[in-house]
Each structure stands twice: as C-alpha cells, then as structure tokens.
Amino acid sequence: MARKGLFNLEKHFAFYGAYHSNKVNVLIHTLFVWPIFFSALVLFYFTPSICELMGTQPQCFLARHGLFLNFGFFFALAYSVFYLLMDVKAGSLAALLCMACWVGASNLALTIGFSLAWKAVLATQLFCWTGQFIGHSFFEKRAPALLDNLAQAFLMAPFFVLLEVLQAVFDYEPYPGFNTSVSLKIEADIREWQEMKQSKLALN
Image 1 (cartoon, rainbow, N blue to C red):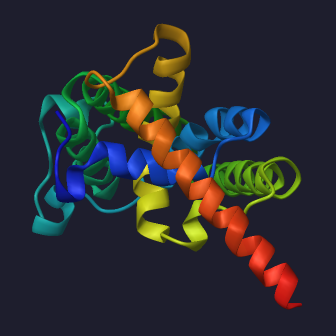
Image 2 (cartoon, rainbow, N blue to C red):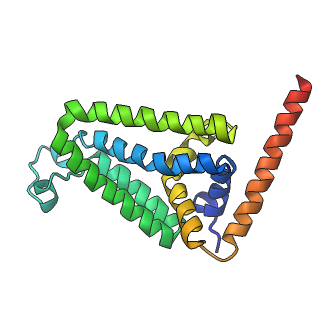
Image 3 (cartoon, helix red, strand yellow):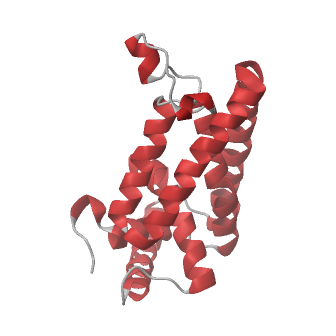
C-alpha cells in the first residue's frame, strides 16, 4: 500500500526516475552514489563524539573498535530510519548498507588518519560528482534532480539506486502495482518536461 506525505515512496521514486531514464546515466549513478555516501562518512568520522562533547572517556565495545557516536553515526542512522519508513523490506537492506558503510568508513578513517582521509574523500567526491554530471549532460540530457529538489536528491539517491538494482535483478516492487504506477508517473513527467522544453525553444 502506498504511504502518504513524506514517506510516499511512489511519488519520490517517480520524481527521481524522471531524471534518470537513460540506461547509461542509471548505471553511472548506480556505481557512484554509494561511494559518495561512504566517503562522506569517512570525513564525518573526525567530528567529535557525544562522549567527547560531554567530557567523558568512552569505554564501551564500540569505542574499543574505533566506532564512536559522532555525526557520522547519526548521519547514517537518519538515512537508515528514513529508508525503513519508506519501505520495510528494501529499506531494511538499505539501512544495513548505511550502517555497514559507517563501520567501514570509521575503520578506514582510523587506519589512514585525517591528513590522508580528507584528500581521499575530496578525490572520491570530485570523481563521482563529475561522473554523474557527465551522465546527465551527455546521456540523460537533463539537469540533475538536485537542481530542482536538493534535499530529496541527496536523501533519496542511495536508496533509489539500490531499489533500481532490486527491480532489475529480482523484479522487486514494494507492493503490487508499484512499478506500473511509477512508470506511468515517470512517462508523464518526462512528457511534460519535453513539452516545456519545446515551448521554450519555440519562444526563442
């Protein structure tokens, strides 16, 4: 059953899908979106933990393994909870990946240190974002979704590329009729965008 408001997966996925209909562009995003999320967590590892802010020394199991309740943790947790609320089954997998990224990014950051981490993060972010903009410019031929809805594009992208993989490989859909309904919405959005584009060209 489709959910309403903020957690309306059908509406959000249709919005994202309308900007990612070209197969090459979809592949580029599938390869580059999660590395952007992971590398951000590497940098967030160096933010202070709750224990540091409270002036206490953590002695818990997590701290002994280089894991701290810092901004990176809450960033990954927020994404995880949001995805779970969007769809329990696919959202559970997405949440697991988010928290796995937090653990992996924390261990990587601890191993390489800040002086190397920020350089690796910068290189990864530049490479992946450049790749996505190339995908939109040369293959999709439509501006990225973030130019129309920045918050939605950043928050939804990791989940949606995962959902696209689940659809392609396992023919997954959150509920019966989801894929058909989303496809119709995407087609309508693309048609409307093309008509607007043609109108602007005619005026010029």
